[in-house]
Length: 223
Length: 223
DNA sequence: AGTATAGATGAACACACGTTCGGTTGTCAA
DNA sequence: TTGACAACCGAACGTGTGTTCATCTATACT
Image 1 (cartoon, protein in one colour):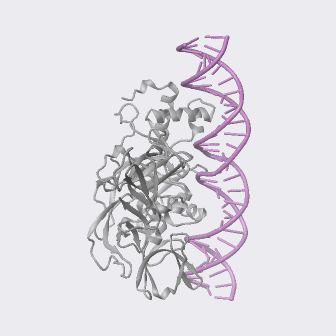
Image 2 (tube, helix red, strand yellow; image 1 turned 180 degrees about the horizontal axis):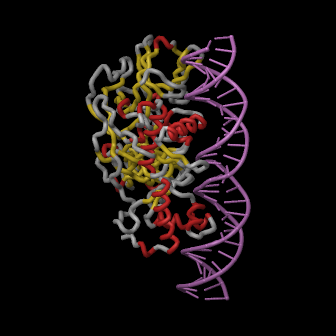
Image 3 (cartoon, helix red, strand yellow; image 1 turned 45 degrees about the vertical axis):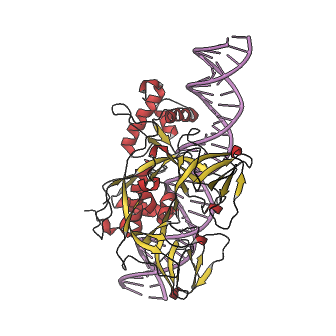
């Protein structure tokens, strides 16, 4: 019988990652993605361990084929009888990922493009918002650093064109040709945009040149 | 409602081929394979029709990703789903929340306490790590601001006492009586702890007074 | 007539991605 | 010490694969 515990820690991680990636995307990950996710920084080592897993009967490979991986047999999902067992079978939701937000470029909005991917989220991350109104953006560049947001972060938003005081919003500033994430405040006839970093100064803009694309619900950072 | 007959003959063939290829291999075909199977001898035409199918809501694409195709909804015989159907899909996981991490206090570790709550996470947020090894901490205070982390953030960690270069870890520094989240590097006989904020200087500590509690997998911020 | 617009073509481009190889480290046994 | 071996690393290589572009054909509309 195949003994799951006979595998190395890395090999178990690879299998688990394969499973979750497959569930999320519908196609297998690349060697480099596996390496990144499991802390292996040489493709040859991933390749090495994948071949081990093939020998052990856990998966099949098509050689010279991009993402030519396939799980065979069953990976024990939650059989680990440790302490509090892990999977309460709650549902998770998917929201479309509409590309990247990048300073000096308009942020893509749902109408403009089709989603390039789906992001799995938990209900708590939507804060009660209808999943159909939610979408996600990937942050590109270090331009959002003043909002305590880093390159690669995933931002979950609710699509809307207005906002309340204190909301964090994605706004397109026409006069600056720039998109940012800032806290939103109405200040008399103007709009005050406050960076999340406490030491940075707010900027004031004319409502006419400031179009709101969505309100930030939550942020996911993957290391 | 999506009308299957509204599609061109080629587009229907593409969907059918996708289905059978997926069933046979476990991963999607390439553009060229689709072309070959459906009698199209230009990759750009396949590309063109794939985009049409995305618009029509039959499939999703991940751009610049080899075999980045996925069937959404059901090809006839089954039922249809709406445009971007937001669907309950995979199971989500729960990890225990072991209190808060706070500078000038040791971070709680799993052995010390029992969880005060459970946090729902998606498999992607664990990056392939066994859910049984994962736990969560809530960030208290503004002390982690140099790590681009704010009060209230939830940090997902994997319980471990060693780390690899480049990992972000939660460490207890005995000589400073302080807990922080930093990037971990071995530097000769010492340990270099690099803040996430690029402009801040790293600190160097003796391994003897630096105990690792866990490696950060991901971070959730709820607004 | 002109002129859009959907569909198709083939070639060129750029990079994503699997593969290979020389070298290093650690462990175990003789 | 020596040798063998499993695991790992980093870099280079070749090609698989998505994308883009200029061009061409139909059909339909003014």
